[in-house]
Length: 159
Image (cartoon, rainbow, N blue to C red):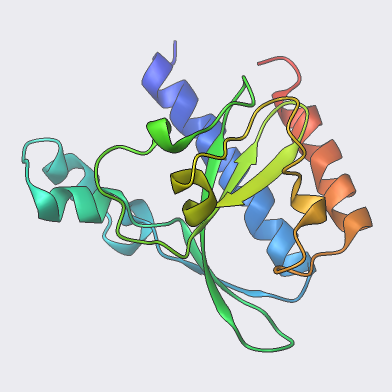
């Protein structure tokens, strides 16, 4: 029987994969950047340590994505939240990636805020209008986002 940690870890990886595929469908280059993929095995080591280096490593965004049209790079952090809630309070400690986009996948929506917006007091809630569809700076196709939202609902429907 999976433990709550492994179940949550699996949900998070599914959400990451959905968002990775969403960016790939738009022609973006997607590079794994997070601790788990950049430095395999370091997650185990950081459990036994403390300090600012541990915090910076643990806070690495999941991806760096590159827009195919203007070659601009973006940090992307993906979170799965069954509740659809995410705020600055969910970010532990000092966050050294001020330009990161936080994409929150829930059973109902795919929403997005930047770290700067979260730090300024905005939050993702089930009723907010911070849908990924309305973000102009990433220039993603509305219909494609809707399709990937359907995929997310199928995966997370019974969770």
